[in-house]
Length: 87
Image (cartoon, rainbow, N blue to C red; front, top):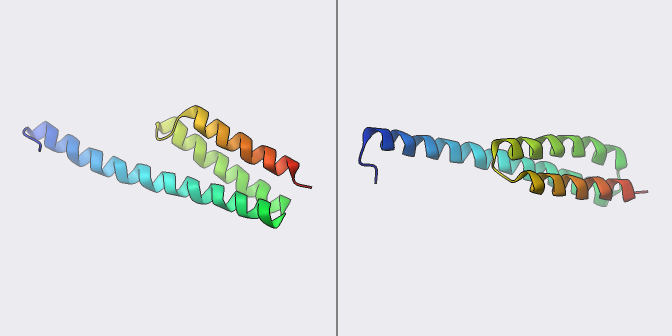
């Protein structure tokens, strides 16, 4: 419970920022899912395009502190290696 005007404002800001972070995290999960679906389908060209999008989304999350930089790098690396393994 906020007791001061500044803490009330901070609580409102936290709620808004939380929604933005959730939205961006959801977008990145969707992008990663599209890459995985393209990899399962065996479509290397579509997977490569989807990987670019997923990479950008993951970097954005890491830059803003929603996820750690190493987590973004690990996810990107694993997707890229799966793409390179695709024949």
